[in-house]
Length: 489
Ligand code: BG6
Image 1 (cartoon, rainbow, N blue to C red):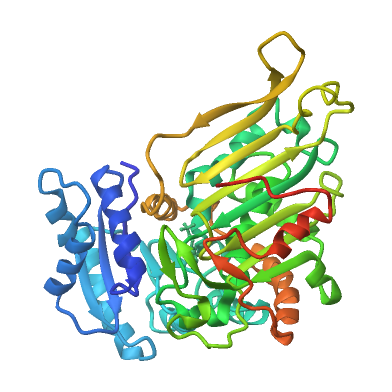
Image 2 (cartoon, rainbow, N blue to C red):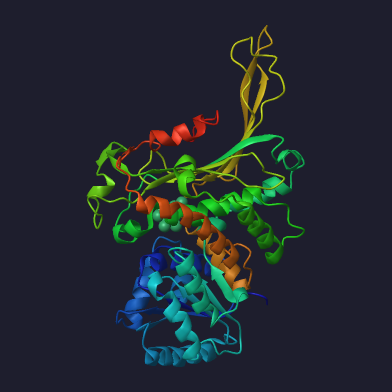
């Protein structure tokens, strides 16, 4: 029986993430019979009885399908510990409970500490886990840590050294939930399992790569966090740069965690730093004003809760990245991400270079460049745009699409990514988690940009209407290079 066995302690068990993603994901794993012996301790400040906590778990898996009383059995494995993250006594009683459950459920001393709560406590908790004896266990110990991993390089370093007092790099699972998405994981398979792509995947044949991750939601109730973060820290430092590294990495010699991660890190090392005067040449920031989304009028960012009416925070970023290595020299990677845009979508468009001569351009319309579109969400699949003969008497070309849909269901808002990542962590596979080196290098890249933006108030904010595809300057960014954003809507 090699099903994973562990005691999972979820810090922040009364929070949104636990309820929306973690409990349902664990339930799905349980239902699919992928878990061995396990128990969960919900850890949070509030005082709750076990019954009350279990009721909230039941509610959070409410929409999941039940089978043969599985749900009740699942929920019975949840226990609650009311906790003060700064108080050693609290950790001691948590440890007592942990030992008790370890015995009851035969968990072999395996412990997972999942920090799904306010990041300001990550460091403190990790230190207490060590000093108060929770990491002192005869099984494995692993720390799962949600974003944000610091606010900039300096704070990230500090946090890292705090958690490293209690856990080795191998024991740290830094979550980037994009790495759990089916089609993000598919990037490497599409690249490395197809003879028709890998030989072309370089600056001789690719003219540019465009990554869009747009949302229609605004900042919701997260104004307080978002004001200090902005799209650059919230999306670019992690999800967007992780996708860039998967698109740009060299083929690893094997699929082990170390090999894959070390190829990814090399991309970050080759990423050209953009600083000072270059920032506004390579990067565009936006902030949404009011507008219309799905026929509803929505307020501008500055009117949102907990947001400064003169906020300088960006809710949109577009940028041009350059990777200075043999494979990619001269190929721009354009990224854009934002809130309150026209559609919720994540797509990657790989644009191939023009063929040497367009024989058909004297006819109706010229040939279009070949595109490979990777649909990350909500649809999952790939589309290859080719040119073929237009039926009829003349030798005209017309674009044709070859499409592959990964599956029929809409992958949005399902806990799928979390399901995979939690399972990986339980099995001890850290491949789809971010390594400290990625985190450090992506912060230093992003810090150069935020430094300029924070010191220079953007006078034109708000500069895009809700429901649009971002500010005009984002289009101009590509036009300067003779490109344009391929439509993703
Ligand atoms: C999170 C950001 O990391 O990713 C959110 O903090 C954002 O602001 C979310 O909405 C987007 O994730 P997804 O999976 O909906 O694309």
